[in-house]
Image (spheres, rainbow, N blue to C red):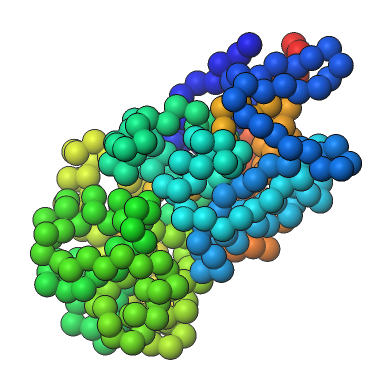
Length: 335
């Protein structure tokens, strides 16, 4: 029996092949510990992939396309992509075995692994493993272009949508706004992306805090009705987050013109979307999922324009064609 290393919060392909809690029988059948896998009538393993909250979510778009590609290319797996409460709910679901795979923010997987913040009640979730990070998810603080809110500090005294209750977005919003020293000076509103879009268009809230790849359908829902602006996250806030022990926040730039009304670049921060699986998922299935993921970038591109930011198409293909493929072949030859 082989053990996987701890949850990978960076781009590490080899995590996909060092399986935990599973063995191969002489007849080629796969057995697992603590994970029940059903099969279709034609013998494929049914893998449930938790995604995001719906059409406005990049997780939902990308996860649904990933499942479609798996079903097209795999003789072993039938994948089902389902809507969910996103990162926090996804980590909990994978930990319980309700989902075998999911997409989640890498900061949230860090919290889950250590049993902190939203996971204090559940305790550490040590059944999570990462196949790899996928693309950056910038913090996008959205205001109407005609708003007098020009900086993050202007959010004082305002109604700010900070994400759905218990979501990864809500966790990030709290971290960032606390680092800016204004968390206790805003009126937090807990809504989904779709609810927040309507609230901002109607003027019922002053700003919306999102953590999502750009261009985000949920933000475009606002921008097609009223022009928007994205607030920058100041360097001093970024430094404070790093000093507080959150190294996974990296600086990114959202270019002007990304949304209607956005006439200046926005300097912000990002976490990484990560594909996670349950530790007891059989290694041959993880091998198959990883192979399909990293050799199907062009297919996934049809789901969302994050293709150009999927940790670099050239890098992915280079890694797959060299060390990763050799490692996978070596690993399978030992079985």
